[in-house]
Structure formats: C-alpha cells, structure tokens
Image (cartoon, rainbow, N blue to C red; front, top):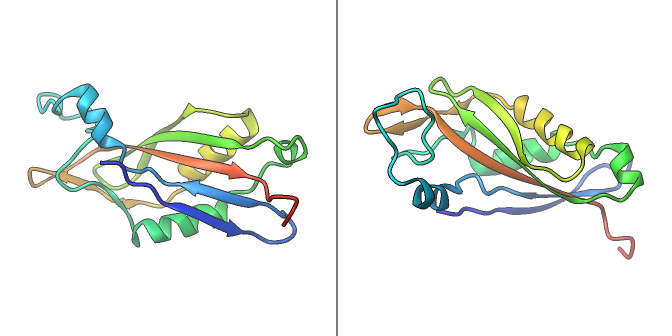
Length: 152
C-alpha cells in the first residue's frame, strides 16, 4: 500500500521557505512484494507489513504538523539553493519508540542530517500489531526540502 500526503506549508518569514513533505509512510506493499511474507521465526526482526501498522499519535495530520514545525532548512543548503527529498527509514518498536533511524536516500549532508534529527526526535508512536501482538515495524518517511518560488 502506498500512502502519500502532500503538504505545502509556509513557515515564518525569517526562514522564507516552504517545505514540501511527502509522507509515504507505508511503502510496505512494494517491500512485501520484494521480500515475500514476513518470517515469524525471527521475532526480533522488524516487519515491513503488519495487520495494524504503527500510527503517529494524532494520525498523519499531526505527523505532518510536527515535521512542518520541527524541520529547519539548513542555512548552507538554502544559500546554495539545494532542494530534494531525503528518505529516512526507522523502526517503530513494540513500545512505540523510534529506533534505528538512518538516511536511505540522501540529497546533501546538511539536509540529510536535518531530516534525521527530526525523525530521531519524534515522540512515541502507537505500535503496530500483527496477529494480536505488538510488533516492531520498519517505516520509511520521505521529507522534501523545497525553497519558495522567487516568482511568488
């Protein structure tokens, strides 16, 4: 299942930029096709698909608000007019904590580090469940950094 949300949100004039957040949290359909069914023999391995996927407390709308509020466009990247999408993977553990965050696909080190910082600082999620048990689930969160159009 591919679930995408697009958000255009202007932040304070101090930063004068717009962040486009592409939340493809549940790119699990493609991963499931490539990986096959989840192997239950290794309970410590995070699943890529669960009966009930993890959810950010308050849902996707609150997740988007959180990311919009927390992401600060790095000055160096802004000066060089660098834009792009950083894909961060992480595991929502059985207790809902965010663990093992890492950049899967980066753009520029300052943007990569900022996206990673924001993901690592997320509060606990509602954990995923599979066959009635709480399980760790791997998620992918693409965050798009986009500067405002000079014509606007």
